[in-house]
Image (cartoon, rainbow, N blue to C red):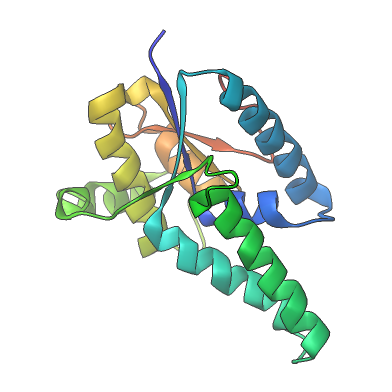
Length: 185
C-alpha cells in the first residue's frame, strides 16, 4: 500500500478545533481525531493543509466567536482557537499537519475542476468556490507524487466531495466527513 496523504480543507480544520461541536461537525471531529491519533503511529500517513486555508479557518472562527458583537471574552475565545490551530499546524508542540504552499502548478488546467462541477447531474445552487477549486487542484498535484488513489481530501463540503467522487479518474478522492468514513483511519 502506498503512503496516504490527507489534505484538510478549512471546514475539516474548523471541526477539529471547536471544543464542543454538535451534529455533523461533532461526527467529523471524532473521525479526524481518530485519524490523527492513528496517523501519528503510522509512518505512511501525511497530513497537509493548503496555506490558503489558514486564513479561511481564521475567518470562520471569527464568524463563530465574534458574530454576535465584540466582547473581550469572545475575542479571547477566538484567539484561543486560533492558537489551537497554530499548535496543530505550525508549532513544535504538535506539528502534526504541514502547510502546503500554493504554487503556479496548482493553477494549470484548474478550469477542468469548474467544468466538472457544472456537469454534475441535478446540480443547483451555488457553484464550487474558487478556494474549493484550488484545494482540489492542490490534491491533484499531490496525487502525482503519492498516487491519485492515495490522496484524500477531508471536508464537510458535500459539493467538493461530489465533484471529486464523480471524476475519480482526474481528481483525488474526497471524503465528506459527515457522510463517509476516512480510508486508512
